[in-house]
Image 1 (cartoon, rainbow, N blue to C red):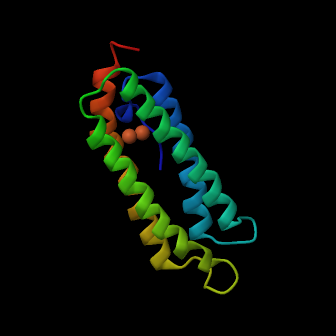
Image 2: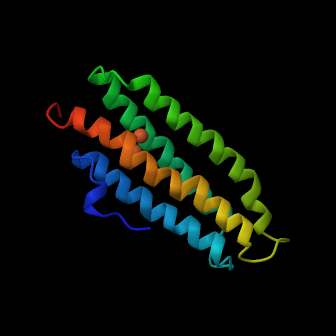
Amino acid sequence: MEWTEDLSVGVQTIDNQHKELFARINDLVAAVKQHTCKYKIGDVIKFLEEYIVFHFGEEEKYMREHDYPGYLQHKAQHEIFIKNFEELKKELPKLEGGAKPGSYDLSVETNQVVVDWILDHIAKIDKKLGEFLKDRV
Ligand SMILES: [Fe+2]
Ligand SMILES: [Fe+2]
């Protein structure tokens, strides 16, 4: 997955964080798809998760600082993601050790839970926030 200009929310800090997020998501997708000893699933998950928590926190801080009217709805979306990611996190370690390398089901699930969600969230929810913040930060 690639960050393109049309995904810009108009706030540089958030755009930069999204780019970093994409890089880490790509590592996870690669690790799931071509599971080799080059990748440690647990490490890649942890690396991505840390960044997700950081990034959501930053957006939520912006929202609180500027009294964003959509704060609660936006935060609720972040929480749904974290919950779904928790579920995925229980599945993914099965790749390590026992399971077949490059499990097709897990690849599909990872794409749905992480990739599709992030793209949709940025395009709709984060952009709306960006519109609001643009003239304020
Ligand atoms: Fe967000
Ligand atoms: Fe975001």
